[in-house]
Image 1 (cartoon, one colour):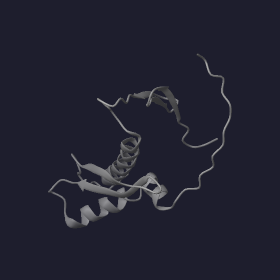
Image 2 (spheres, helix red, strand yellow):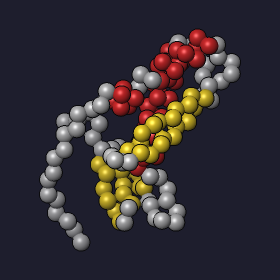
Image 3 (tube, one colour):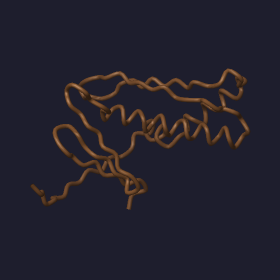
Image 4 (cartoon, one colour):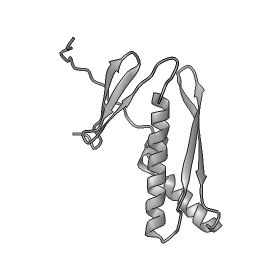
Length: 134
């Protein structure tokens, strides 16, 4: 069994639900009013992991990083279609010393999602048939 099981289910058109066994969220997409795109969810997961890891380090080392956040964006490339460059900016309180800032950035950059991206995970892809209810 995997450490992080999630299910992504198609609901209609380009909309889907995501489920981790604890909570479910819906992602609705239409040409006029899209909400979240999959690439934005990817960046969200990365940013949340980086921020959580950084804040855990801050709390463990009595560094007040209240209000810190991470801004992320990505550039699209083709052949193959992917995000070619990820832009990550840590926004930190101006009360921190340079040593504290460097330590927090090192901590955030050690998050599990960041490490996974940097170390190219192995993909195992399988299929199984499901009964389609109509």
